[in-house]
Amino acid sequence: MSATRAGTVTLRDVTVAYRGHPAVHHLSGTFLAGTLTAVVGPNGAGKSSLLGAMGGTIRGFEGRIDRDPALRVAYLPQASALDRSFPVRVHEVVAMGLWSRIGSFAGLRPEDRLGVDQALAAVGLSGFGARWLGELSAGQAQRVLFARVLMQDAGLILLDEPFNAIDSRTTADLLALLQRWKREARTVITVLHDLEQVREHFEQVLLLARERVAWGPTAEVLKAEHLFKARQMAESWDESAPTCERSA
Image (cartoon, rainbow, N blue to C red):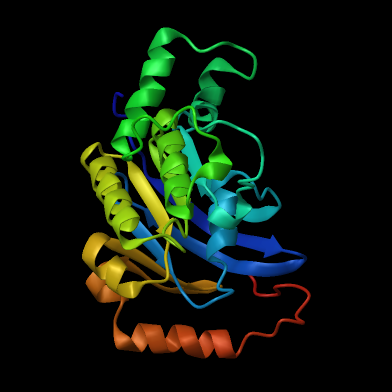
């Protein structure tokens, strides 16, 4: 598959609400083009809400998210959002990555079927196309979702906790796929909890505690004082606060 030109994504005073409460407060900053960025922070810090706004599944946000309108976006939500009991074949799930280009009703061309096979091979699932999704392990199902992302050929890739509850070998293989995307100059933004994983594989970090705590090179952001500040901010959250009254 051809590489898609990655692009810069700039947040300008973005506030995202979740269930009526602001989950992300007045966030500004830039995700650099062609980089691997981890979004980290305490539970409830607004990480998933931020990705949802960037991926288009949350539309009721304030502020601006600026990027090239032509930039194709692939968004992989948390694995818990996947219903593996739904009767669908693996190749059908992967082919859904072509939806934005071929629509809902167009049949697959021979080159599309070849692309599906190549995507499955890239995630270590050659020969799995005819299996039912429900027959797969959690790790195999996550590989299928990464193959679907491959089919989207996106310049901006958003991954929400993609390595939760999967085995170490699958995690290592999928982390290697992130490095491939970096070599292809794609912009990858990933919500993660494992800070050692972040230190080893990600060059940029956004440390979020509903507000921006720190954003920049990994070694600079993951300093003890920044992590301590994020914990303090998490402990002082007022869950009953109905609105965010901070002025822009």
